[in-house]
Image (cartoon, rainbow, N blue to C red; front, side, top):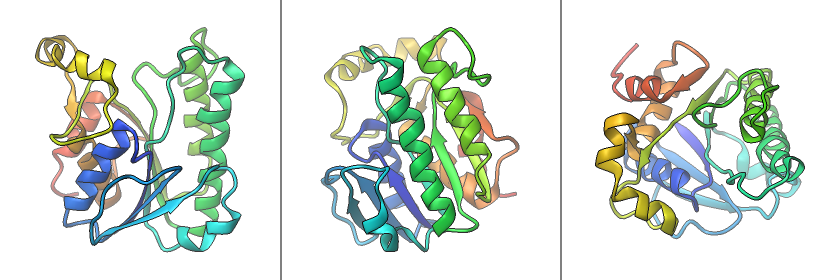
Length: 219
């Protein structure tokens, strides 16, 4: 399969990118990002765009793909709802609408978050914005849309894009994993690949569903 990965300069996208580069089911990877990923690989091509909402000049580079693994995003800490919506809803939807038009039959896998509010109406700002994004993506004319809601994730060995605060938290990973079972990021990437290869039983995958999807070996 040929896949597009966004957010490869962030922790989640980098982990997913590494799995795609090593997985034999993936033939070609296009990293769409605002800056270079820092990786070189025979499978990898990079498309640098300053604004995911303005893709007119790169549409030719975005055609011919079976899947998009949308891992770009930002923390809501310190952001207004309007600013967070621009990144988490508007940008995601504009990007996805372009891909759906250019690639009929594409599978979209979107990284959302644990405790996302599927009604889009709840009291927690980030949760309702993500919920609205999930619902809007599900209405687009893709072959399938899968919203991933991972919780605790463990970076792959050698990952470079890990925030300092997260590196500190990783010291507590074995303890946290006892109460909030996590998943290595390479397994998150494998679960995405398996969604494209085999499908998934539902459109919203919580942490346990992601672990189960990573373990699949056939239909």
